[in-house]
Image (cartoon, rainbow over all chains, first blue to last red; front, side, top):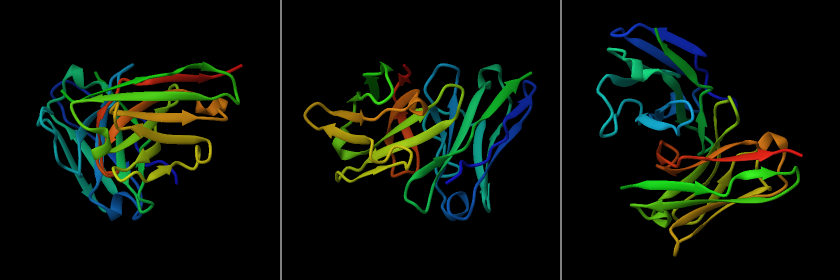
Length: 110
Length: 117
């Protein structure tokens, strides 16, 4: 099973909004409302930012939001801040009852 | 505080074996699904294995037959026994609480496994 498709990189200026896409198939992203997003700073462990497509764990800024349409999920970060610069990964439950990750997107804050 | 701490990584020759440990605090390993996820240098995340609260285990095709996930309930610790290691197994290995394959939280700090002669 191939990894979910994410853009390799996105960038934005402080205060702007950016969106990262995550494209799969009807056997994963499109078939379940079980998409999650992770933030990973260099040399650090991933951190859960969004679960079940659009839910934010306690402590995660409301500047982070998630959505899904068909086989594509999206993570939007509004009011971009320097500390948001990191790698972002999506993940989805699959019809094999196992998870699959996206290839990752490097966010650069200009 | 909910926390996971991995240990056991290191440099190992191809064909060798290594056992990773993941000590949990703040929650009970045996009452949760627990997964191992790895990240090769400069690459993305790859799910490796899961153990369900009921004890069932599942593996990615890339490690099936070579890796074994297990837990010690008395020590509240998760393990990953890795045999017949290959260069392509070189990665940082993370343990994480697995919410039914839907999301992972928390994650440990990771332990580096390097397979090289």
